[in-house]
Image 1 (cartoon, rainbow, N blue to C red):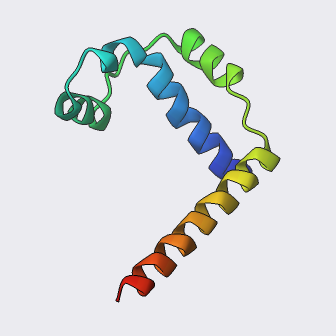
Image 2 (image 1 turned 180 degrees about the vertical axis):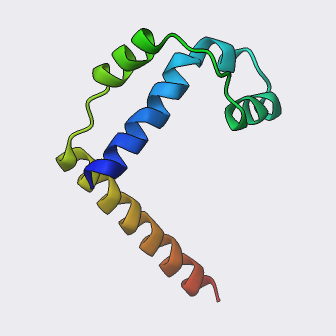
Length: 82
């Protein structure tokens, strides 16, 4: 679980690190950019961002539970439509 949380933290840090650039791009350009990130980054700044993002195990589990409930509700609604 801690590995999953770290992976999400890194993904959020990437978005935060490139926030300004991403805000100025179209959706298609942003997708292309995120698929092939620049190789040169300020590592000190990037790890500072990672350190600032604090996702607790409790918060992660709470979010996963909400996501599961939302998926189940969606499936129930679809079943009721048939």
